[in-house]
Image 1: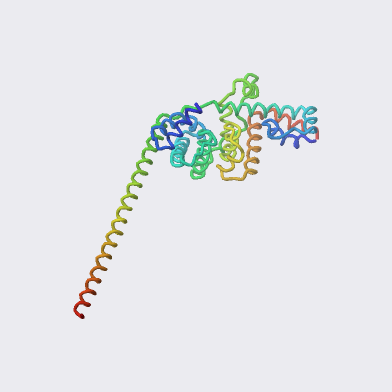
Image 2: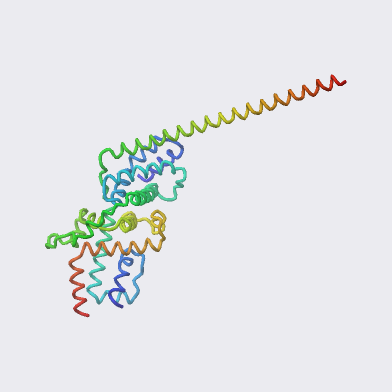
Length: 121
Length: 194
């Protein structure tokens, strides 16, 4: 195997996602350049993993800004649901009024009909 | 800590706003750190982390608890950072890319020794910032935060294959940047041998 073929496999071998085939291992065992690259990848990935526990101190005011943003969003949400509720009540009112008007109209028509029948009789 | 967060998540999902605030207090430094690593500056990190908590708040009911809350939050933060960086269309890596190298090569400042020993944050941070935002996102999420390839691909809006290719390129670039002198010597040796 050539160094450039092995070089592509080294990071995967280091992070455990690729298995080192026998011919790759044989090449690395006999190649100082690839051995050095393997060590460099090991150190790089170890250093990157260590960054995980390295928590930065957020800029002052970050927490306040996050909470204020959430509060504003919460208020907007509450306002929306309030408006949605009012809209529902408004639409419901219109529906009830329409139904009542319809019923009243039907009663008037029915009464007129009855009166006409009595006059005819 | 994990159980504590799980309890807060349950309470927050039930509508307890104070519990969500406690969740924010317990995790915001971590989320900010990730946002900073992805964006490379404080201002963008602050914007990203605010947006991330807003999305987390709105989507909390959809969080089923299969993963840890922090992992879920990392995914949201990564997604927000990608969107934010696309919007800003800033390319901060150009300046650093033009640098020949980031280190001096006195024996006492040998980067290989430093990375293996004192874990020099500044050096590694500079090397990470030298990557394009796309490459940086993949290597940070995979090698620092241990997110699976599938999750990284989903949050960055790319295929899993593309995420793996980016990761490979990013690691190679980082290695070349952190150990440039040795690689140059080796390349010269190879050229001479051919």
